[in-house]
Amino acid sequence: MHVIVLNGGSSSGKSSIARRLQELLPEPWLHLGADTMVGALPPRLLGGGEGIGGLEGGDGTVAVGPVFARLDAAWTLGVAAMARAGARIVVDEVFLGGAASQQRWRAALEGLDVLWVGVHCDPAVAAAREAARGDRVAGMASAQARSVHEGVSYDLLVDTSRSSSADCARIIAERAAS
View 1 (cartoon, rainbow, N blue to C red):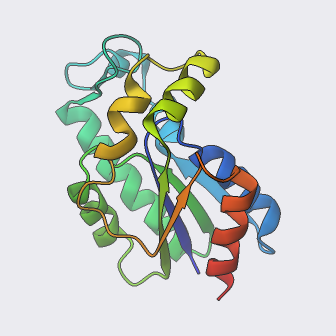
View 2: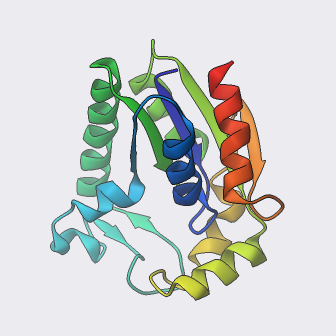
């Protein structure tokens, strides 16, 4: 296995699962994802327009501009290049475009052994986590809880509103080892 892609909405538990996977999996795995990429952006691209909007205000809807889209496409290819160079990577992603986002990742990761994992979470549970975190715009978790899974196909599904991140990670690690 080269790559494990965790797709789920904001506050669904992807990062917690990724950290647990790093503890469970015998080889070292890098944890990279949407937050890593957004954190690397220049601040001027965080206010919408050509960058990405909705992360610091609004109703929880995320808007993607053309410059962000171009950088995100380069990021995806870069992550794939790292996997091709021998790094094992847990991708913590939010498929804002649903099936189109997965298709972009599939094309980038072509030829690699990838485990596609849908991280589901009840919208109310995700919204409560979002409020407790205090670092997300209210409404983002409930807006993304279902939409990021539309048209996406998975090898495995986990639900963090029914199982702990540790239990979800164990299930994923077992599948990755098989």
